[in-house]
Amino acid sequence: DERRSLLLKFSTLFPPPPGVKLSYGTAGFRADASILQSTVYRVGILAALRSLKTKSVIGLMITASHNKVSDNGVKIADPSGGMLSQDWEPFADQLANAPDPETLVSLISEFVKKEKITFDRAHPAEILLGRDTRPSGESLLEAAKKGISSIVGAVSYDMGILTTPQMHWMVRARNKGLKATESEYFEQLLSSFGCLMDLIPNKSNINEIEDRLIVDGANGVGGEKLEVIKKNLNGLVIEVLNSGKEGGVLNEGVGADFVQKEKVVPHGFGSNHAGIRCASLDGDADRLVYFAVPPNNSSKIDLVDGDKILSLFALFIKEQLSILEGDAKGKNNYRARLGAVQTAYANGASTAYLRSLGLEVVLAPTGVKYLHEKAAQYDIGIYFEANGHGTILFSEHFLCWLESKSQELSSSSEGSELQKAALRLSAVSKLINQAVGDALSGLLLVEAILRHMGWSIHQWNALYEDLPSRQLKVKVVDRTAVVTANAETVAVKPPGIQEAINVEIAKYPHGRSFIRPSGTEDVIRVYAEASTQEAADSLANSLAEIVD
Ligand code: 16G
Ligand code: ZN
Image (cartoon, rainbow, N blue to C red):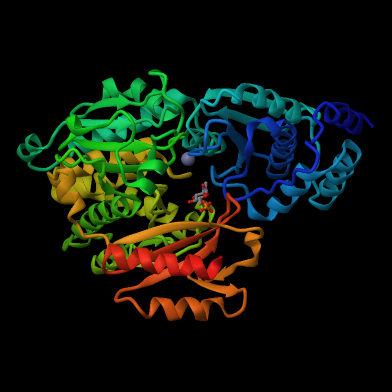
């Protein structure tokens, strides 16, 4: 019929590269950009089917995040703005790896039947398209459009060059029936940031804080977007380096991934930045880390990673919740459940700090989809990976309560500390991206909280001291030979390996160590933590030997 012949016709234009097998991992499909045309075309089809199935707007984002500029990738944003539902991942793999158009078309028709997907001309598939600044993005976007138009009636809207979190935000907003252009996104960030700044107590001590923030844009999309909003940020002066306009290469010696893993200054930063607060975004601006350049001309930095951003957020939110819980005369009191979600990579000192604040802390496997799911179980759930990806989720139930509490306070306690605490929490829920970790909104929240506390980056960094740690990777033929459990903290396969690891860990005071197969590369990753750097290095090395 019409649908089948359209699919066949377009599919023949996008033959898959022979001998390549791709899998929809934690970050969607990712590979060298030169082999991705057919994959992106097929993800276009997938997005259209997903939209028909969910009767909602779906997002398709072309990015390879912190990876090198010659790579690219593609992933789907589900109706909630979150990651593609995990039960569709196997279908994504089948589509991407179908050897020829006939196989592809029959896979699709089987799947359409199985999922009971219906074609209704009144409700066509709708897909928002976005891409990062990679040069390969433009032609891959065309492939995605072709994939979408292979499904009869499906429409796509090209939203242009975006950060990954902007795409997720837009999909979420559209499905809530809200306007979802970039200017609405910026407007929401600016007004909630302004609101937090207006609520800063004791405005005198913020004069002690450096207004200036230097941002390493990774030569990617984030710097560009910051340039657009920075003139509207009262009380914060942002200077963007590595904006991509000075000729630097995306993610090369720059960006959050580089800074967090290497713990050295990114390109363009040096001793002239000593003492100034600095931040680093990754290539698609969904990761954020802070750092300070020490005054001694060394390339080493003081890293303020995702764990410490989480700790700062937790401290601030806990403070506001405690104010509200202290409302002795309140009619409508509620004890909110505040939780933190981390991965096994979280520095042990951060976990201990969060528990000392009275938070519940749980571990999830690496990958945003796992952390997000766990954080969504709290009234307020904060999740962060040490690498700087994270956000704060507010439950509908909590937001409803907050709304009614705010109304109660606006009549009974106008201008009180209680009312301010409620307004701050409400502003945080609007500033921080509810769909996915977002470096731009995270950065604005960090800046507002530092001013609230009256803290320099050094005071922030002193919340706790990181245990020395080491990360290594070991190239292996088959990374699936290692299977982990308990949020990647134990290796259950190959047999006996965890016992060997335990023997090594026992040799080091405060030793903690694990191995896990990477979700994005053919390597086994090793993490070790101990009371000294030498011990952490040596523990990591001995695990690497076990793996090898
Ligand atoms: C992906 C994940 C990131 C994770 C990283 C780990 C998403 C959107 N991104 O980039 O959260 O930290 O993979 O990479 O989930 P690895 O498995 O190679 O260590
Ligand atoms: Zn990223």
